[in-house]
Image (cartoon, rainbow, N blue to C red):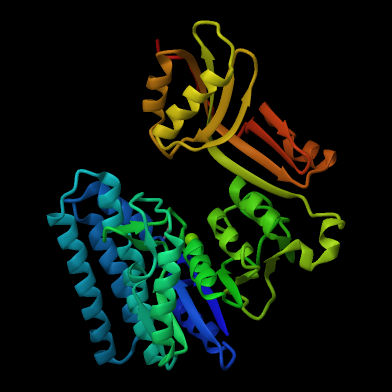
Length: 437
Ligand code: ASP
Ligand code: MG
């Protein structure tokens, strides 16, 4: 039996947390093989992004080094073991430095994908060694050997056939001598041998890829929350855990911005009916949430669902109207979509009327100014910043009244199960802009 565990950044952010991971792995039942997929430690990925932005300044590079050295320092008392871990860290940091200084490519996204996976590589290198010394015998597998993709840097598409093959060949070999394989999430290699990433927060997806390829028994994502909650505890102090949720509902929640699972994670599992558990690494004895096929729990479709609330702050609401007084119809829509797509900007919510088309996008992803300039040739473009999208899945009228109290609604949309609103939250300052002429 093969299972897949995924440990995110928070679960390995310090020496104590890594020791806790060892406790979790120690409890794997006998005769079970485990793929343990790790993220970069703590906020390392953000730190690497800062390094990319500021290099040749070395401030962030120093902080990255210090952070990992401190973890090694606290993991070991034995000086020899400590020195061995330092040496491995040094080698990776040296490699990172060489990449930063000598490798030049004009493609910014390609360069990003050469640099950012170092977080995961450092993490698995330190953790694998520590686990072996702690008696949890494991072998490290370089994810770039087996996750094979196209060249869409920063959001690479998996070549499923090649990846499944490579995963099966590599793990069959390694599992002959070890019960635990430690590997990196979030990263892979393109068919033309270039390192790639699968999109921010993509380690969940990596776990699903391994599980799919190996027909795993189940996948567990270890988190700092007790499971899938019906709201972000940051906004709702009375958020509750959902004990069981269908693949479908989980995908919808993830897609609308619930940050608990990466949206791409579910499909590969659903297609093979592999259950996904979301559990707390802080209370690892407790059951978390089980994500699985609704058909396996026949009462699911009839029982009353707990409404789920998702807040997506930091949105820009854009309203686009043709200058020539043509209607918002297929040709205009197709031009507008093409413009967003060419600038890699994802539309989170949209609505059209006869003369105008409104969309919400993330303020901090993609180059909104470039899109605006492109659209302004043919359209009047107005926009509001500081917008929040509020999504309620399995809503009732009462839940909507409660949640929208005190908020100004600019856009609203309801389907049978989901209600969405673009709102101004009075707590967030909003600046209204006139179109640039
Ligand atoms: N370390 C990567 C990130 O922070 C991937 C992940 O943690 O899932 O985006
Ligand atoms: Mg994460």
